[in-house]
Image (cartoon, rainbow, N blue to C red; front, side, top):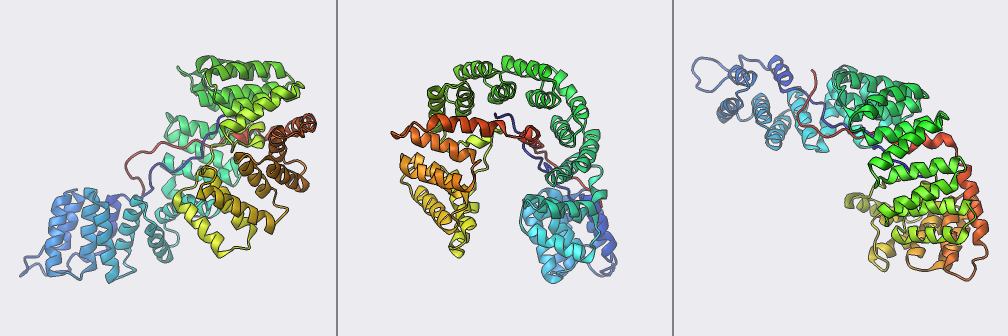
Length: 511
C-alpha cells in the first residue's frame, strides 16, 4: 500500500567560482604592465582589476570598454569586461564577453573559467564544453570537477557524477547543498554508507535543514542503521508541529523493526492531525494487511474516503483488503472506481506501498522519443518508450497522441511478444477506450510471459468485469492477493526517495 515519497535531492545552488577567486585567477594570468603607462589615455588592466577587487563593477565595466576601444582584439580585456558584467548580475552579457575572448584564444583559462561560471548559472548546455576544455588543461581542478559533477547529475549519469565529485572533494567540503547532491548520487548507486558520510557532513553544516535531516535518516535506514535513522528523525517528530514526512518515515522504520505499536501510534497521530493525508491512510492499510487485520484497514480507508472521495489510491487499496476478506463484488467495485478515477493507476505499484509521482515527459523529451522511434522502427524497446511517454500525456481517446501511443505499443508487442510491459500498456489503453476483449488478450499475453505480473492480473479483473466471463474473477482476486503477500517486506525502504533541497539564491565555491 502506498506511502509518502521523498524526491531525491537536487543541488539547490550551483557550485561556482567566487568572483573574487576568478579575479585572482585573471590577475595572476594578466600582465598588468601590458600597456605603457606614459603616453596613453587608455585604462590599464591593473586599474580594471583594482575596480573589480573593490566591487566597483560599473567602474570596471566603463574602464574595460574604454580600453577595448583602443585594443578591441585583446582577449584579456574582453575577459575583464565579462567579469564586470558578472559582478553586475548581467549573466547573458557576461557570457557573450567571455565567448568573444575565447574566439580570440579558445584555450585562454580565465575566459574559460568565466564562461563556465556564466553558462552554469544560466543552465546553458555550453557549460559542459567549457568545463571539459578546462579539465583537459587541469584535470584535477576541484571546482571544475564539482561543477561537472552537477552537470552529469542533471543528465542522470550518477556513475560519472560520483567520479567527478570525488575529484572535486575540496570544493564540496564546505557546502551543504553540494554534499547533498553528492550524497544523492552515492545513494542512487546504492553506496549508502558513503552517502551517510556526506549527508552527515551536510547536516553539520546546515543543522536546521529538515530536508538534509530526512535524507540522512533515509540513507541510514537503507544502510541498515534503523536506530540511528530514528534518532536523526526524532527532532522533527518532536517539533511543534511535527513534520509529517518524518512521522511517516519513522512509522515505516518502526514497522520494519517489528515495533508495530509505535508505527500504529504515529500513523494514527498523522491521520488525526491531517485527515486528508493520503499516504497515512495507505501506510495504515499496508500495516493492516501485513498483520492480517483486513477489516481494520478497510475501516480506516473508508474513513479516508469520506475526506477524499475521489482518491483512486484509496479505492484500490481498499479493494485489495476487500478481496482478502472474500468480498469479491466489493473488491471489483473498488477496483473499477479506482480505474475510473485514474486509468493509469498501477496495481503493482500501489499494492507494494508506493505512491508513484510519475515524471511526466516534457515536450522536448517526447520529441526525442519520436525521433528515436522513427530512426529505429524495428527496435521494440524504442517503440515501447515512445508509447510509455505518450501514455503519460493522458491523451483523450481518439486523439492523435492516443493513436500514436497504441500504434507504438502494438509495434513493440509485435517486435517482442515477450515484452510484458508493452502488453500491460496496451491493456491500459484498451480499457480507456472501453475495449475489454482487446484488453483481455493483452493481459493474457503479459501473463504468458510473467505469471507474477500484478498489473496484468489487475487489468484482467477490470476487463472481465465488463464482459459476461466473470466467473474467473474470484480466482484472480485470490491470485492478486497471493502476489501481494509475496512482496518482500524489505522493499519498504524503497518507497521513499530523498527530499529535494529548496532552491536558494547565490553562488558558492572555492578556488
